[in-house]
Length: 270
Image (cartoon, rainbow, N blue to C red; front, side):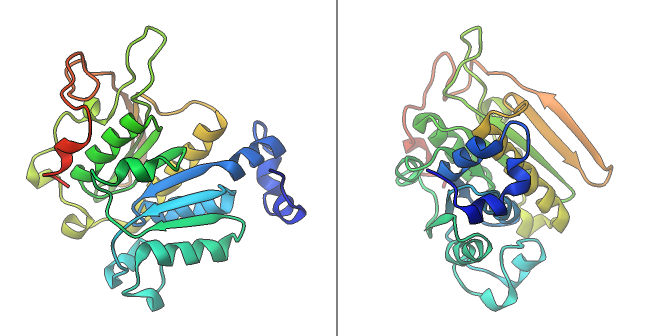
C-alpha cells in the first residue's frame, strides 16, 4: 500500500520524524484501531488518530449526542444533537481526513458481540465511563489477543495504561491486565461517571491525546510503552506521575487458577 502525493503532503511533518518515515506512515495507513466510546476521551483520540493517518478506525458507541456532551466531546457540534454518536463521529472524521475508513458500530459492546467486533482490529482503546465495560474490554482483548490501551477520567484527573495480557515477560510470567491493577471495582461512591460526578473538559482532552500518542507508539514500536505502568494526571496539581503494577497470580483471568474461560461471566453485569 503506497501513499498518494496528497497523503505525503498531508503527513509531511510526521513522515519527517525519526522512527516513522514513509515506511512508518504506510504502517499507520494499514492499521486497524477500535475505539470503545466516542465520548470525552474518544473524541480527541479519534480526531488525532484520523489526522495522523490511521487507515481504519472503528467506533463502538450506542449513545446519541446530548447538549451536555458538547462541553467536552469535541467530535460533535450543536446541529448534531440527537444523532447517533458513532455515525456522527464517522462523518466528522471523514471531513477531517477522507483517506481514513471509519466503521460505525452503533451498538453497546456486550459479551455476545465483543469478540466478533474485536476480530477486525489490531488494537483497542477503551475510553468507556463505567467499570463493567472496562472489565469486559479487558477480558475480550485477552481472549482475542489484542493490545489494549485503557484510559479513564475523574473530575480533575485521569489515568492511562497499556495492557498485553496475552503476552509474557522475559521470565515467562504473564504481563498484567486490568484485573491485576483493579481486582474489583471501587465502592459505589467512587465509581461515578461524568454524568454523576462532573469532569473538567480539558482533562478529557489530555487523556484522549495521550491515548492517541500511545496508539501510534504501539503500532510503530516507538519509545517506551505503558505496559505494567499506570500514568496518572492530576490537573489541579499540574502533575504527572506513574506507578508500576505486576501480574496478580490470583486474578481470575490469567492467574494460576483462572476461573474465566470465556465472556459468559459478563452477561449479568454489562
